[in-house]
Amino acid sequence: MSEAQERLQAVIADTQALLDTLGPLAVTMSVGAAWVELGAPWQQALRLADQAMYAAKQQGKNQLVVAEDPPPCAGVSALEGTSEEPA
Image 1: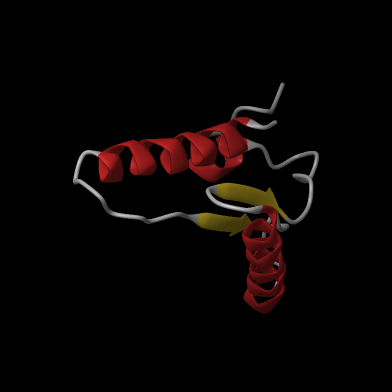
Image 2: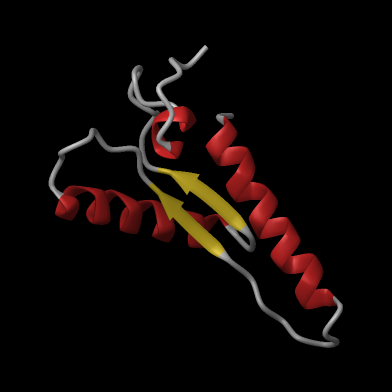
């Protein structure tokens, strides 16, 4: 699992923990994400993320599904704007 996926899973867990403190409130989160090449059409990213979200919903509560594996040269550091190469 990539660092980005681990961060998203942590957000899901943290959100559920916060909601649990508010009382009897039933809220779940299904997240669909997609890795896309820099400069790729946004419509492609949206379509892939949307498909992944529906797959997450089918898997059950509080799920994260990533549509595709990250491209070899675009790790989390690329998302954060650093020039480090992924390990």
